[in-house]
Image (cartoon, rainbow, N blue to C red; front, side):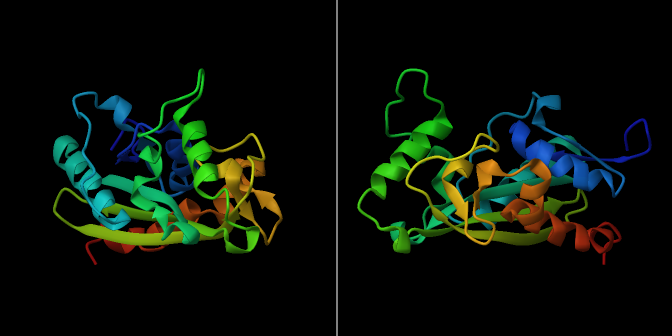
Length: 211
């Protein structure tokens, strides 16, 4: 518990975007979400799993053991059907084998590589989905695993200024907008992470009660 009587949950990430997306919905359940910046003693957690579920559990178990608090971890990424569901679990480090252009962020480098790999793929075959596996690990060993997805297709050039990661290339046909054109609330209502979070919170009370 924090000083205000709220349950403190550690989100196993340094990613400010992920923390913002999860903090507000979880606040409605009396939960204060904090990131790993409050725990500098926790070093880099090597993600050695081959699935989103395995990587999320690796992170949450390590953070729970280090802090003694309930830990929540999300492992998410982009699956592109034309790339045999790649980059998948390697989404964040997809372009590590490419050199960055001057002033280019990792996100932009990842998008540049993705567009290169899909350069000869027509729009009809650029279907994709964002996938999020979210897990909660309790200090007593209890674990909760849920999953959320968001279907779309890859654009031929970035569109929109919001979000992070591959959002500017992800097109949601049902609303005819890219993920980077959505407000935070609009994105949370549709996104893979929003869907996973709703699944997590739907089972949260039972999880905390040990059911």
